[in-house]
Length: 167
Image: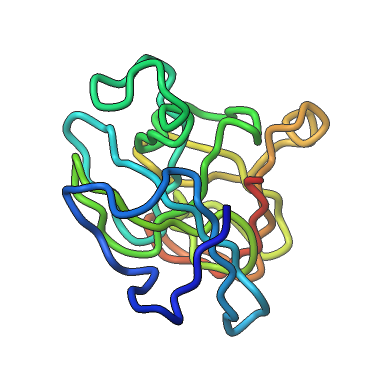
């Protein structure tokens, strides 16, 4: 399902009440071309998502969306290294508090917060505390890369410009 922001709203909107169907996608022209945004729920019990935060699927049934279609779009901050690409929902481009609904970038050029070791032209893998790390060649071969860095994250928690594909 696609939604249009021409009727109001923006990719930075968040809410404690669900305003559209979870998993809804929106294509928005960005500086590096079109970006696909996806509507998700922050089901992380204690962590807000920050700009550049890698968001992964919640593995356990959510109390909010238990046994519903929406459960597939309940996310938490990445807490594990090298998860498979299909476990990554996307990357937050602004703050989404715990228990809020909002939009995250799922495909296209966006900013990603790295662990300080990602160089330009390297593949990205999930890391702990919502950060990205450099994917090894074995992780790339195993489908664990979700993007490529266009710029380096010169120090820990620096935003890097990257192209991602989490769809």
